[in-house]
Figure 1 (tube, rainbow, N blue to C red):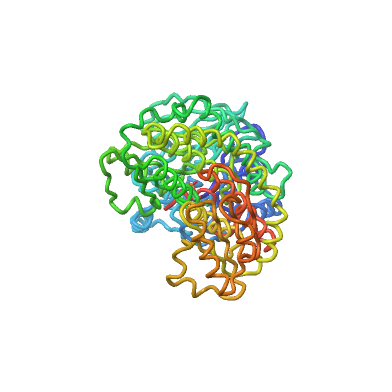
Figure 2 (tube, rainbow, N blue to C red):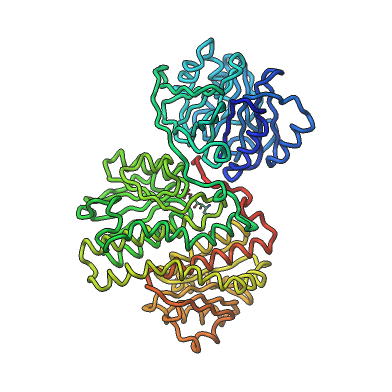
Length: 607
Ligand code: AGP
């Protein structure tokens, strides 16, 4: 939800901090700030608005010379975006930057106010500075540990003490935090892209650990001050992968990466026969009797497609939950249940808490995650990585299709193990995976069509996506993509359900995007298309050409996009790319900030 960075080295800290924050703006960008420890003592500069506003302020005001510092880019949770609510927050001898939510901040603030302490901001974070300062005499580790002992909630903290000017301290609970290992310089960051330009080596800080960082070294200890030995992790990402690669937006780059990322995700799991699918990640499937998929947003939409596939092929009941609902609904776990958490970032608070709930109940947990070493990846019993690489655009694309591909592999493995499909069908689907990257590549030939459709519809206010079965599941993702980056209100609707009320909203020119990849229900969806067409809808039909007769559908829709067929199971992945392109170009035509849509953040690490 926010991004934090820190630097201690032989160079000026400000440029390093600003560069690191620029790589973390996807985590939130409504205000930013730095704290520098240098010849002028401790100097804090912070401002509402994007990082560029902070950079301007630093340039015009100066006074930020120093080789040690911490920085922050914010997604507001408590206290509106403003200069005073921006991080860092400072009290007494302590300055902090924070990613997360202090859930008991009101109670802490009240007790500290009663002790005569004055607060200047509306944020939850400010109580952390007050608390650490309250416990600080001459031992920073003890002060941090005592303060954290009173905090309920999530945090990744960067901390500077006035009288320890050459060191940064860091600790975490739930929110992500890494410590970068440099040559004569060291770092802290919320995520790898912030340090990738300077080092690939880092430590993952676990809960209950405190890191002390200086230019000469890194010391990690537990809350009792006992040293902890850490294993060096090495980021495999290349810098190029984290940049735009010549595309106008990260989102378009990541859409176009999907043939490669699907291949990277699927191929390593398809080396042998169907029996070998996910063999390293899922040892025994015989005890699996029911599956609960838990996720948020697009990850949850991937789960919907996973449900369609697993129930159809393996005949195992699947429940898909929105994580923020799951964690508070006192879920019922039947005998033989497993929980699968899907999360691109591996840090989504609701999904992480759902994972912990399942583990507490003794339910086997699996995680489908894109970020190696993320909290969800580390805490699940089993992790199945999507190898989509760094996804920078807030709107997920390649991670979503990689999640769906992993779920389809799981469905095939389960069906084969349980013998619910015959060998020929299993092999046919298995083989279809190998041609999936090529099918996706072919969808880019529709780019101009999608640009034209986007231009036709870019001034609309409402749009509907309709489909049945897996197509209805896909429509949820098509709708979210369009909403989150173009700000057009849209809704995914079961095609057969429209007539039960919502069809009253279909009037002249209202765009309806229909998807047909399920042959068994194609005629039914075509009837629903006719229902909306007679009421004036502008109909765009995206269909598997094996499911419809072109001459029968060309006169009931305004735009027809027919896709070459592959295994029906895999068609939603191919259609998803088209819907991503449609949303992308619509947002571009509307002049929206495609990679950083308003109000959003890439990883929602608060509930
Ligand atoms: C997707 O485009 C959105 N940015 C959002 O719905 C996202 O999928 C959701 O927040 C879940 O994130 P996660 O996969 O990192 O857990």
